[in-house]
Length: 159
Image (cartoon, rainbow, N blue to C red; front, side):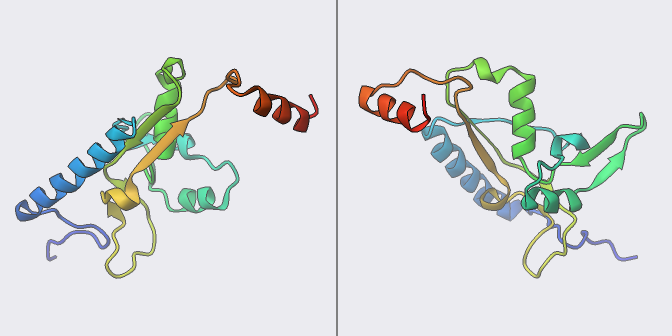
């Protein structure tokens, strides 16, 4: 057997590393200037973290996940995207208590078992396709800063 990478994956060789660092530095700078904080989420999560909420894109992601059972019988999945992991971390670590809105982003490897097209990768760390940013709104209504807007929006809700 000839040793080679799995179809849809690629190596980042030493001469490519500097370009990759520049891209990531630009992503960090732009998102940091926007007030977003980077979160590093695990490469794998409990599979239910990625369960569909009924949207067609979520169903596609679920069908393309790499799912396996660990030694303890727990069903785990390699992360196919970042949003679910970011939301899990947000809830698990009580980030709702931080000043709002909370802006988070993540980048790194994401894995999908999809029919890989020429030039694309199943395992990707491209920040343009496999990074995610989430702005989480206030869980409670904020006082209105404009009495005109407040009264008109209350009237439109029938209150």
